Image (tube, rainbow, N blue to C red; front, side, top):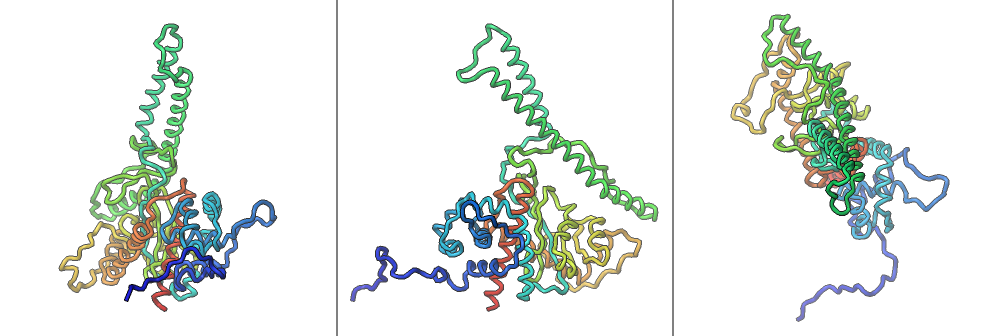
Length: 458
């Protein structure tokens, strides 16, 4: 008996128009995102109400297209345009229409308010679905370095810029002297003295502007760091006044002049050279922050900063949580990079959530002594330093159990975004634009997470 094979017929035209919904399974992510976007009561949709110009693509369709593509690892506007032809789920989302990459890029760039509103509305949707319980919420906050859309080789340091200016000014002098010599050696074909002088002067102007920006950043950084320095100095003086032994080096006042290695990037001036990975190498990047609810693993706050570390990020990241959720937060978990006595006091002020922030770096390995039952240490006196109270809070059984949730929640979320989604580099440039894109990434992650939770519960 001959083998029986399914007949593949690519030539006979369809007798009836196909139903786009039958192209993908009923529980597919595209269905979920489409239904979610259509149900969100969005108020910042931008539509040309005058009726002039070409027909517009519906904003909800464009929003769903962006969210789905980011949730499945397609970030480039050109790649999204190609997907409207080659990806069945994307063709379903767009209703078999094909917005071009310029339209997609413009919609993404011009709708920051829409993306921010959608982020909050999705959290409200999660609350309505009982997947985000507004009881005693615990948040884990952390930051991760995401590459900027610029090469670190397009950057120049403050010292290098100064040396280049001196060299170029010297060469301009040489070219001017050469122009005055009637019998000077001719230049190579295609080169002229006026053009070479103009090119060097343009470069000098750009380098001088770069140094001015670096100097302004140094002054702003010093102004931001001065309150923390003064608070730390006052704390140490108070401890000495109480007769305590104060160990460690004295804090140095912040400098308002640039360091030699302070950088400026010509491609994306608002990005920074930052330590990446384990700190063994540097990348041109931004510092993307997130606050994750520990039970649902939903991102409830997303923001981006150009600060190379997390020292000043605890307060603004907690404040970025929507007010309805922030009022229900009971505890905030952070690693040692976020800790400062001033930041902890600000978050906990006026009945705010308790902060659990490690003061020292700890490994993930659990020693035998960590497995043994331990009694809570005695609480420090009311006059003890804030760091002593924080250490005691993390040494209690309840504190240790709660703090273990941090590495089980926010770090896997960053792993999913970078590994499963593949988002390791921003496509946009400038702090405002990359914050918009990070909001879109976190919005896509949240809807993907809600879809997984509801499919698992079904």
